Picture 1 (tube, one colour):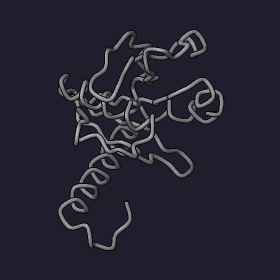
Picture 2 (cartoon, helix red, strand yellow):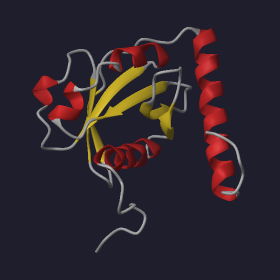
Picture 3 (cartoon, one colour):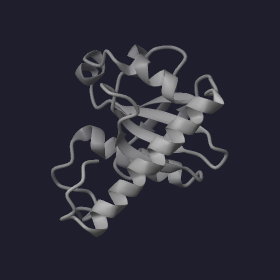
Picture 4 (cartoon, one colour):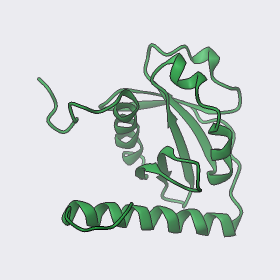
Length: 152
């Protein structure tokens, strides 16, 4: 049976992001997908935890998808922990040392390793939480009023 909540046209990375977000919600995190922390960067999943921890999860659906990503290190300055989310068949040995790993599908995920923590400075944390809140509120507003002419 096809899950009606999983869009038929969802891209593989979006499917992974859904499973990651579901899993992290079970740990008390709120997640926003495709958040832009800074011009030129777009994280697949940003998660805000119950103790204000900020995690970034980059979803990679294939070796080629991973190899073509040259900007992931720019995400490190926007989070306390950084993770890769991949499907069970992904060649995890190509992922960089010192990063977290999540195995996911469209329904759930498993955190395999967390990688090191690098706490954000308080001023940066405030900026990130504000961007997170603003982006989440805009998305909710657009869901409730799809005809509203605002950008996200």
